Image (cartoon, rainbow, N blue to C red; front, side, top):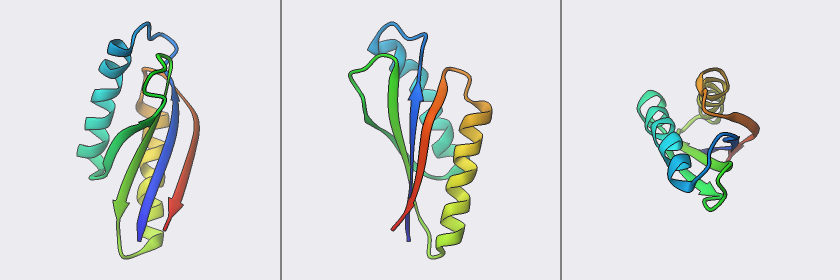
Length: 93
């Protein structure tokens, strides 16, 4: 099973794309290290104050994949201080 978590983020204090990338890069690295997921910015790359990131993983069990991605989403909501989570969605294929 392939699991994907899409998170729409708001970064209200960013005043440039360089600053936005500087705030996102540590988040992406942390998610990869902590949760062993592939993660990248997927949309809104040219917008200073918003971003859509996606985390993906492969697992033979759909329930485990969903639980793992729910853990990632909860961690971002609880620990990421550079912005706010606008929306999130988990898909299992």
